[in-house]
Image (tube, rainbow, N blue to C red; front, side):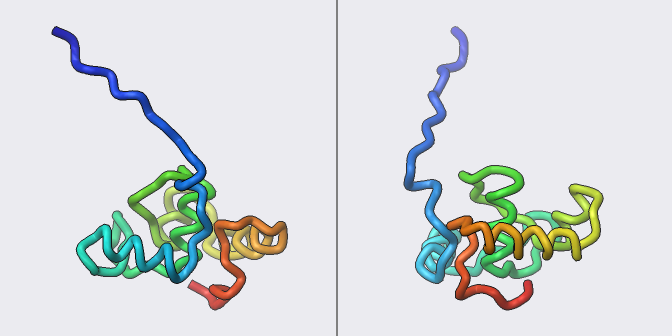
Length: 103
């Protein structure tokens, strides 16, 4: 008998901006520990979570730090920092302006 096919659903709930509240929710989902990079296990800044969601998958539950994203896309970290700035200026809701300190 073939494996059961489970439909993938996407709703507005997965498109919420990364804020202190959503960051706290991510902590609760991981047993209270802060989210860490899946590649190097470094603790993540909210902008790194947002950039992973913007560049890879808005519904992502596993995230990359800036260094690992740069390596994955073969670009300098400065280019990703510039993209974060551009996305924030464009009003992308994934990037909360109160989290404007550098990752």
